[in-house]
Length: 114
Length: 114
Image (cartoon, rainbow over all chains, first blue to last red; front, side):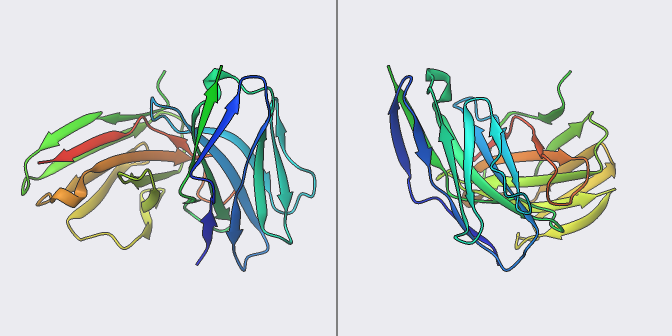
């Protein structure tokens, strides 16, 4: 079974600063995808960024980037120039290429202070 | 314009009642899902349907029965509601079930069982 671990239940960052959220996963698959989803207080789940395991290049979406270390099974999310609107729960998720469901970590609550 | 919609958004009911949550997507996707988010915000897959066929049925009590009348709809019926069923239920859809596709989530239904 695949497991996803987010070891930071809560993180805090000041506006305009950079923060990194950690995620590790366990799998025996070689072909899979990793995701970061954001859940603001509105509870809507929003995809932040996606990484294909076969790609060595780290994914980037504007202020959001990942550090994907396949051998270490690590997938951290870096948020640069943090904004108040970034405050939310962030979930790391895994899905094997042949899979039909996202396996989520327990989430990290990000607080952004002015 | 709503991509994935759920009704109702809030549901308060008594123990022992039967209730349904409806989900519709207008994205033309083949695969639909139900996830449960518990009081600690942990998200877990319940069911996956691909082209109206049940693909994943996680360890969910038999009181939960999904029904997919067509590819655009996946409803969740819950019999004999229990206190432990209180949670937020998310419907989602994706172009196909396999790994890398983004899953688009509905707004969630907060179910409270009294």
